[in-house]
Image (cartoon, rainbow, N blue to C red; front, side, top):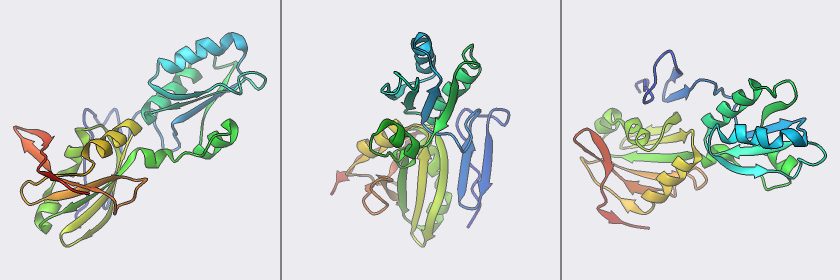
Length: 233
């Protein structure tokens, strides 16, 4: 099986790094390491600093959820970003701001967030990940540029090959932004597509690889589109 060498869109060697391994590629943008999470916790906050710090966090990206319950007393503000990259920007912004000597900002895990906020545990990685199974002739599956297809929806953080046997090839595709994975799954749900003998099934990682949606990308004039031919359950 050939090793994959895939370049993320609008990136350069000075701006990002890539780990190439057999059947997998992982992209790490500036400031986003493998310890990054969607959740930022800012501690040691005083009432006077809350609004200014919150404005700084909001300026870094789209916040999915704010958890204000611990502001009074412990002085802790927790927020969750949709996009992993924006969480990284937010953390860097806080730690390089005028507040860096007065507050403590850090990533927290899904489990830590659930404990501190007394909310049900999340699975952030599954929420930004889809499972794609390609079906078709073996040679076409080897040549098919599946990364180009998914990069038209949003930047991918990693692609891991889960299996390749005969006319079936399965990948785990992880995005940076949870909204992208949701949109891919929602818009392709129960849609079947046909082109050049290749079809593939997509589902959110929450559902597992056997509950996907069959479709095939349609490439015209250099752009990747999706063309519906029929639907099924």
